[in-house]
Amino acid sequence: MTQYTVHPTAIIDDGAHIGAGTRIWHWVHICSGANIGERCSFGQNVFVGNDVEIGNNVKIQNNVSIYDAVTLEDDVFCGPSMVFTNVNNPRSHVSRKDEYRRTVVKRGASIGANATIVCGHHVGEYAFIGAGAVVTRDVPAYALMVGTPAKRIGWMCACGERLPNDIGTHACTACDSFYQIGGNHCAPA
Image 1 (spheres, helix red, strand yellow):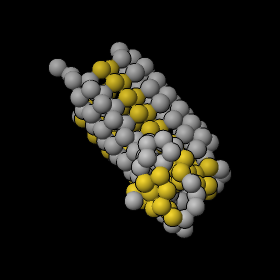
Image 2 (cartoon, one colour):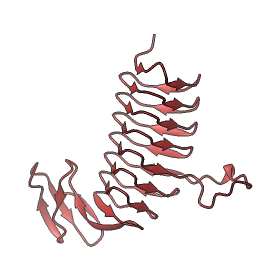
Image 3 (spheres, helix red, strand yellow):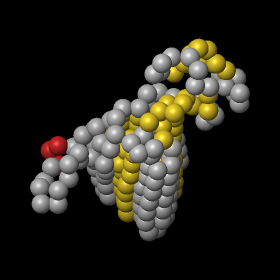
Image 4 (cartoon, helix red, strand yellow):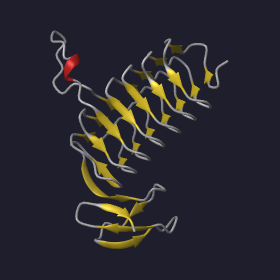
């Protein structure tokens, strides 16, 4: 007996590991090597490859493809139609499956609708990638990234509210958590 919910149109290949309380909706395809944690949600038309690790309480919105060599830690949010890549220089006529570059999205990070995460990079914990951004390099923890290519324009609290950009110790106005902000880093104080 499964301990997760799966819509009749979804395809779950034999061998996929899916944690308790996970919900899998319309036209989702999860490949056999995928390892998915507890209490996750997969919206309509999501694809999950074989070499994919997904932590607990991860929310994947509609039309997201999570290809091989992607790791999503606990509490990650992937907005509608955002994109992961796994090959830096794809060509239809050249097989590059041995050249996949691993992408890691750290705990609590949010990726906005239609954003692109180019392979081989780390998105730091609780980072916030704005809608439509194209990430072409590593993203620091708590960074607010927007644009093409994505640039850091500020910092975000773990609760999802924007923090001051000034160097020093600052409190989140929503949850009163304190952060130490430096030139290119932000961390809980």
